[in-house]
Image (cartoon, rainbow, N blue to C red):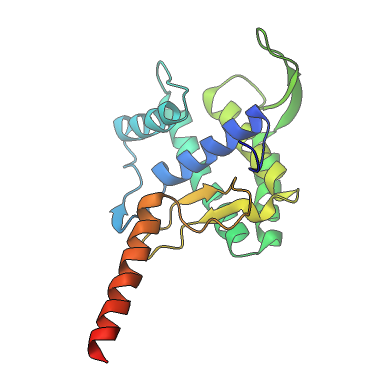
Length: 200
C-alpha cells in the first residue's frame, strides 16, 4: 500500500512468523484474556507450532516434536527482542538478536522461485523445519532493528495484553496489536469520561 513501510517478501514472511510464534507460543495476555504457552507434551507443542505456521500461510504436513520444542524456546527469546525494541532499549534487542543469529547459524543466500526474481533469504545449517524458521526469524528481526525501522517492533499498549506486532503504518504510531484492543481502550476511556462528567 502507498505510504506504508515496505519489507521485501521474505523479510515480511519471517517477521510475520516471528509475530505469530511469539503471540501463539508464549504465555501472557491477549485482549484481556490469559494466554498459556503450549504444554510441553508432543501433541500440544506440535499442534501449536502447526497452527502458527498455518496462520502465516505455511501449513506443514507434520511438525517434528524436537523442532516444535525448539520453536517454542525461540518464541520466548524473540519476545525479549520485541519487548526491548518496544521500550526503546535497542542495545538489549540487538544483543539478543546477535545471540539468535549465532545460535541459529543464519546464513544469507540468494534464492529464486518460479516466475520470481532473485531474493535474499536466510537459511539455517540444514533443512530442518526449526533451523530454517529460527534462522529466518533471527535475520528478519536483525533487518528490522538494524535499520531505520527499529522502532517498528511493538508490544500492545492495551491493559492486559502483551501480544506483539510489526508496525508497517506510514506514521509509525501503532500502539495496539489489533483493532479489538484499540477499541477496548477507546471504549474504556469513553466510559471514564462519562463517569467523570456525571460526578461533576
